[in-house]
Length: 297
Image (cartoon, rainbow, N blue to C red; front, side, top):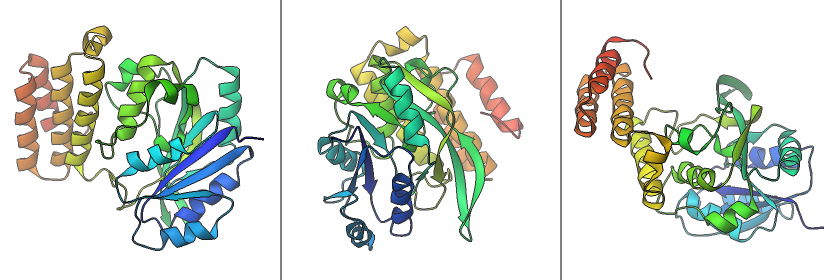
């Protein structure tokens, strides 16, 4: 019997975590799946650890090219009706696949299904939950323009979506998933389960770290939006979103984050950049609020 779910895991230098990540798949209450791990040119012992897990997993290797290229290799070598994403340092809750497969079977119109994730740090082998991410109340394409609310390691995509939308954009690095969600949501209904399905590990080695690399986060978000608007140039008008106002707000948000870190010079540079996108009164109010308030978003 062919596996119904293809679990794809791009792997790069996660020797400390990859065995636990794969174990969280093996421990699933739903078992009709294949695991495809793509080693993206790791330079530590990650590949040797993966080899020890054969034949429970299928392994592919490639030169380092980023997570989008690794995921694409996995997708191209998968056979499942559903494709589940999992990062190589995250963990799944045991009932994750069972709940998502049941939901997708009941709702054939849904192209992408996700859930919430618990952000954690590991201390002495114990998970310390820091926060919960994943907006599930009313997920749709136009809301995605305002920010990525879909935790990668909770996503399951119907293969029909991949056949129509194509593979991930390998020119993007660290925002390839956000851009992919938008492409899918533009053409298919998406849905979110309002419950935690995965654990997202906060560590220095994450592509976006723990949020401290403010400018990378800003750059990747803007790059994803610009790529999507190339494909759907009318999306701003159709969604009633002022593009320049949104880009200004994203820069103000970055400026506020720099202020919180005590770097006023970087903060003011982002505020000034925001004004190059829009000089509406609302932008000046946002800058004033971000300057004066202890909390702003």
